[in-house]
Length: 463
Image (cartoon, rainbow, N blue to C red; front, top):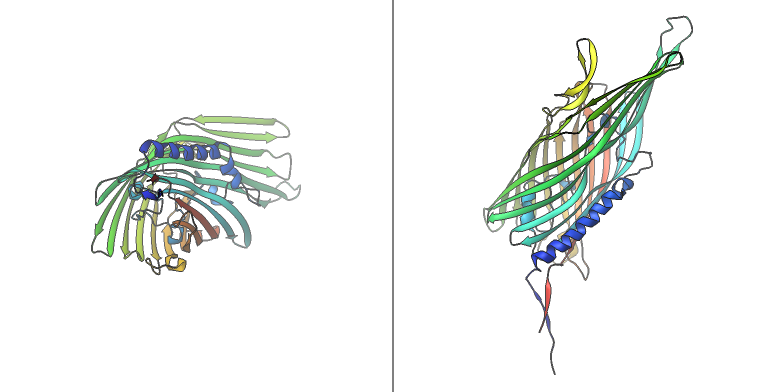
């Protein structure tokens, strides 16, 4: 009797086939973006579709989004020295070279957040949900990994107003003035990256990014007396740019159980040729409406980014990481209103922003990496982070951020995969400007991420 046996062969499929499969995933991500599903997911019950309600998003490109993914949100975003074949670490593209030759990874994450805002006696509570990222990765060959995905870069979404009484200077009664501010928009990023390990302890990598988006900031001053002239201002702009990230990781094994990885990243600044528009409109019941429009070319610039990180792993059970990043926003140009010769002029300006510093530390613990039970492989995580603002608020420093996070990675085991993971994290973040009396914001976020891992790149041999 003829016996038929089947065995797995540890060779991956051809590079051509891997590229074809990766291209299919990229087309799905592009279709998701172009069809508007990225923005649609972010619609919340508070009538804002940007994923934020913060008045601080009124300045510059809005609130910068967290770069962390499911594996490191519970560690406050520590990533630059992280290196693991079962994660996609887009924050340092050199890590792609660690990809498993037989696996395809797909990672998607969402966040649900509750924000408490306080300014003096005024308090407000708002809710938001956002799609944080969607990323895929696989290996081209030995020591050569590839990743692609998309994420929001920044978000703008606010709508608030204030009303004050004016003194009765004409004897016709007390009048009120109302200032209204609203805005929407933000930047998005789609990227493709490759990581290579030319030497055993050294890995290098790069991300090629396409960044696009727009902003709309609107302000109006109206009066209870319709005979008083009203003033409306609108600021609009659009950005399209190609940018790059470069990464380096150096690994050193002190013993069979102890490994240290040093990570470095660098992103050069980019000058943007797109224009900015400022519309200044005045309306009066007697004279009608008049508007002045100013257009400025070459109005924007993205910052140079530098990062350094260190991680220590002991026996695949303990991992401790520390990251420092610098975003050099201070030298980036951005259109703004400036006083020149006694006149208010809308022009390209420098030092509209300030350099942003971020320091983060995180720890991960696995009870028993060699255990046979699911609970032995649950990863417990915790982290702390502190960051300074990039935007200025009326010429003063914006809000500093303090974050505490914790989370867990729960393995998903079934007949098809044994490496998929459900990442659950909670983050508490406090934002407050240095000046007293300014707006305070406290965020509580629940972050959910699913890392799907499948053994796609293997062939079956019949004999």
